[in-house]
Amino acid sequence: MRYFRLVVLVLIVGIEPGSAPSLSAEEVVAAPAPVSFAKELGRTFAHPRCINCHGFTTKGSAVAKKHAQRSRDCKSCHFPTWKAPKPAFSFTGISPEEMCQRIKRNTPDLAKMAKHLKKDGAIIWSLVSGRLFGRNLERAPPGNRKTWFAMIDRWIAGGRRCHNP
Image 1: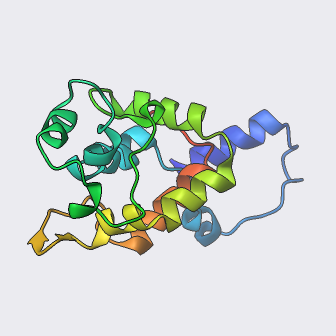
Image 2: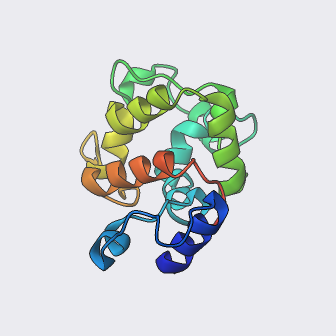
């Protein structure tokens, strides 16, 4: 498949046969494929842990109803600097493709997006900790920082694809 992509690229770019730089089989195979949001990242963003925050402001959502029954003191459950994402970032009831489009539309700055997805304490907590005030909660996939960082880097470098290539 990667060989096919290379051939297509050569045809599209218009490189003459024999004039392209030579690549070894290892170099062609070693190049990571772009990440599709729908196929790989979507399952993380649709995880109940992510939807718990990214559905908080959706009127009538299960998350909003659950929070309405709780204390108004957010700090009783959340860390002091926690704040609900803006309604533009609600992921309740939408497909992974729609989530992806919403993220791209609302965060066009790639550096800002990467910083949020890789350095925000709430995101890292949701991926790797699984603890909230003595309770163990199911971790959001992929379950570790290294895998998450690699997926985010490949998604951004691959053009932030929203659907399967």
